[in-house]
Length: 74
Image (cartoon, rainbow, N blue to C red; front, side):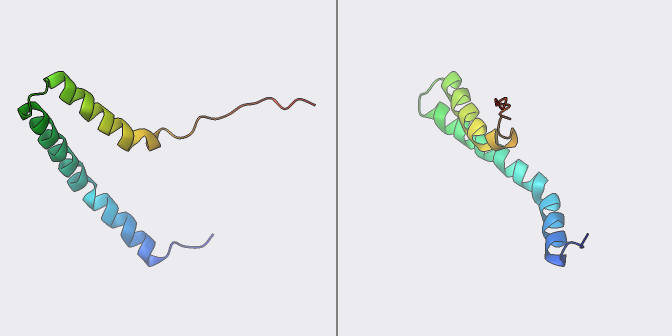
């Protein structure tokens, strides 16, 4: 098996180092969006629904595709 190229190792290291920073920035964006929706006169429940929709659209790729188990008939 071949070794990973050096750029791949560095990109994995950089992604691991920046993941807490990116998570923190996403939390700040979510808070800003909740404040903006609340200040615009929307109910807090509507703000929570909006944040849930954003989270669902961003993280739906983590679940993977459903495994199709169709029986082969002969």
